[in-house]
Image (cartoon, rainbow, N blue to C red; front, top):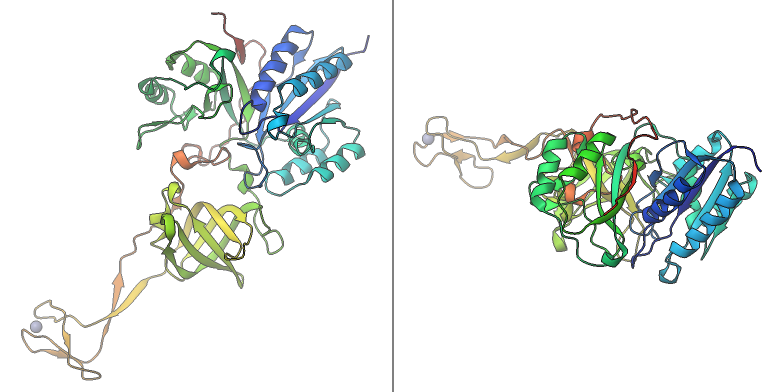
Length: 442
Ligand SMILES: [Zn+2]
């Protein structure tokens, strides 16, 4: 018999675009662990990493669990079987699983995790890290999932949100999800501001249901366990659900944009923010996307704002000389395009006065004077009053000195929504007695 130990379990990249889902695997594993003699020390953690890497599955989300157990070897073997069984390897999943036995997490684990939030980290770096630090690893395919698996264990929360994910019965996998959109709207109203991004009031669109073949029916994001449980009572679904699990997450924290870009970190697939001066006027191009450039300490950076963000038309109001702070991910240069920063937000810091030279206005008639010919001055056609020079006319700006965020339907998992601006949630104390995990009996 082993003595009691603290076991950290991390896994990632078990899903593929065709089905399955890392959080569902977590639900299955927790269901198993609950029946064993193991004690949960925290919520399951759902950590989203750099959303701008090219080989991510849907959301680049990894899961970690922290438990106390007397029988770690039995549990490890069982979890390996779970990962093998529930990973969609034939459709491109590259699952990674790591175990770490220790009460605390060393700070260099956290450093690794922080880098994975905004950089491109390859699987060989993860394998090296694992062998250096006595992590037990298990992987299939190319093992890319090891990056997230280690990152999920090492993650340290400064702020967090919760997400309650509900799962479908296997007979419903792949079928259309039917939920009363009125109930989602009401749920959002009744739980505001302790849930967020559930319903797009502007477009009357339900945001909590995914559209793929995965086992998730809905996911409600918020700040407090009781608000999420209340939400499940309000939501009306047409089918009976299998159960739910609440994850502690970095979703909605803007975590990937904490990196401030420097000359050396402006690399393909990196995420972060940068401040600069608009150096060419924005132009709308094919598909309604808007492009412009900023100058950051002498370097030009091309920026793109895609139409679905809903802020492309706002950005058109920028002019040369405006000072802005922008955040997003770097798209790799192609033959026809330079490297581009895909904007996820724009914070307008300073607006240049938009001055246009214009014909003078007659002080008697309040009419614009006509030119009498080159260098001949100007004259009012009504009262014949003349004036020598053009005047400076200040054109009102169409954009304000403020932060602009994409529409909620264009939010990424990590995007910080308006309701969470300035909010730091440290309060979700884990408690075994709350219903953070539930298999419904129906
Ligand atoms: Zn006049």
